[in-house]
Length: 212
Image 1 (cartoon, rainbow, N blue to C red):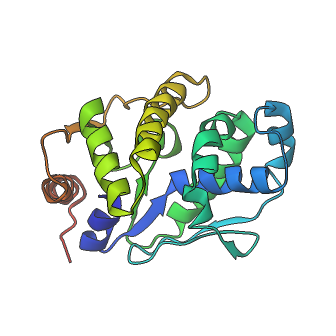
Image 2: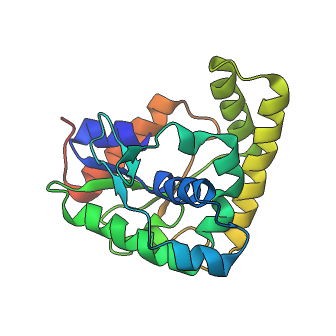
């Protein structure tokens, strides 16, 4: 949805979740104990993480290596919440995220769990997307089936999705929460196209932009 809105409005795009996944991938690859917050804090300044902001083909690299595939694997998925909860990690990546936005000539659509509440508190448009647990689980299952993933893995990943939501909502630093001035959009009964249309219309209204 975020990429589609950015492409339609001619804006840059930033998937901040990919940045946390990239950091987690690096920690695992370098045998840092991701359950040891102090060790993660000490190490988080080492990797060079670069996030491309082209909505047509966003990229994510670590030390020059394309990690767009590996960061979506189950090992990273299972550990990313622990890494993302470390204040030093968030401080470093928030700085990078704001840097990406500062270089976006027309503006940027930033996707992430603390965008409106922490990273971009003065954003022109803030959207808090939500959906029922059932809707989210069904969408994730359909996505995984299309990729040929077996049912046992689908069930496990659906459970992990709920676990990560709970962990991210309860962490002390920058928890998943709706900013006071964010527009709540419940997508449970909406198609992807309907969500894209609704968000695009909201941006057009508040920011005065028009679709390309």
